[in-house]
Every structure is written in structure tokens, then in C-alpha cells.
Length: 82
Image 1: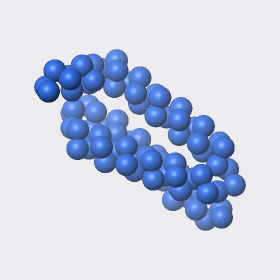
Image 2: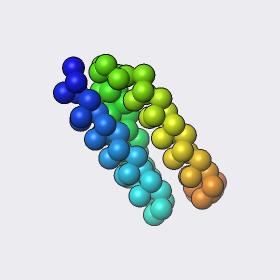
Image 3: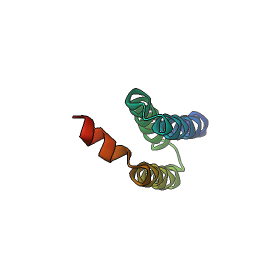
Image 4: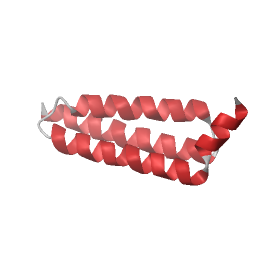
């Protein structure tokens, strides 16, 4: 069970990094990939012993990323292009 924790943490960190990096360039494909990686990491982490802590830190990371994107005005740009 603990062996799942290492790839879960790595995927969560990688997903958050991809999401933040692609948000700087307003690359929606990269944002989607980052969200998928983040979700897989959180799902994988939910099967481990430390599932509560990983889930809470993942939710905090997702909220932090949302806050960064909102401050940059990415959501406003998304809805203007439609």
C-alpha cells in the first residue's frame, strides 16, 4: 500500500506543475492535462494509508491553483473567447 504513495505524490506534484505552467501561457490543453494528472494522483493517493492527508493537501493545491488562475484572469479570457 505504501508503494502507491510515491507515484501518487509524484503525479499530484507533476499535475500541479503542469497546470500552473500551462496557465501562464493560457494553454487550455495543458491545463486539461494538468487536471487529469492531478486527479489521477489524488485518486491513487486515496488508496494509501495517508489518504486523508494527501486528499486534503490535494484539495488545498487545487484551490490554490484556482486562486492563481482567477487572479490572472484566465477564466475571464476563457469565457470571452466563446
